[in-house]
Amino acid sequence: MLRGLWKLTWLETKIFLREPLGAFGSILFPVLVFVGVGRFAGGRLTQGSLSTAGFLRVGLPVFVSVLIALSGVLSLVTIISIYREGGILKRLRATPLRPQTILTAHVLVKLALTALTMALTVLAGKRYYPVHTTFPVLGFTMALLISTWSILSIGFLIASIVPTARFAQPIGAAILYPMIGLCGLFVPVQSMPPVLQVVARVLPLTYAVSLLEGIGKGEAWSTHVGDVAALVVVFAICTALSAKVFRWE
Image (cartoon, rainbow, N blue to C red):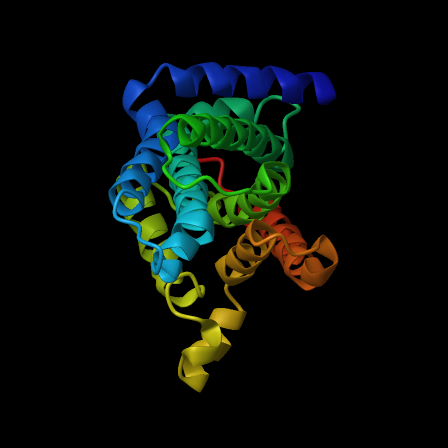
């Protein structure tokens, strides 16, 4: 089983990298957003620009990280749907591979690409980013991988149900992108109306943003045990549901 997992992971990596547009959107686009916004806003910093400096130091990396995670999810939803529509999943069903193995392979590929994108962002930031501040790169990368790992499971649940590639990405975007406005990235959850606060508290992206912002500000992991636990619970529930409702064809 482990051998099959690694073979499938390596195969999916090669397939992904053969698509230049997908590689650009998932790997290079977030880096370009980071560098472009950083240079635009950073070049206009003044001594009193505390809010802008705070956004560049924490808010922008978190925003780019959310883009990385969501692009990975939408890519996953599209790929699984294409495989189903093209009969590839039907062929995989004749092998010992189970839905959990396919999920794990895709998660490993997306996590590796997420780590690569984060590494390129850090390198680009050192060369072009105008704000010289200390940033917990290792801790933030770990938080990003945990968040992506959890959010990807939502994508796999969506992909387990959506029948065709034609509807996969629009449905995925319709479910995932509204989360951005309610996750506390732009408006604090505490400032939202009570009903929206309740909705925000059940969204996994809310806990991902809380974890990323906290670690980005240098807070201890012990203060974000609840965020990590929530993301782990989301992964466990979505993975279990995916295994039950997964459609091979």
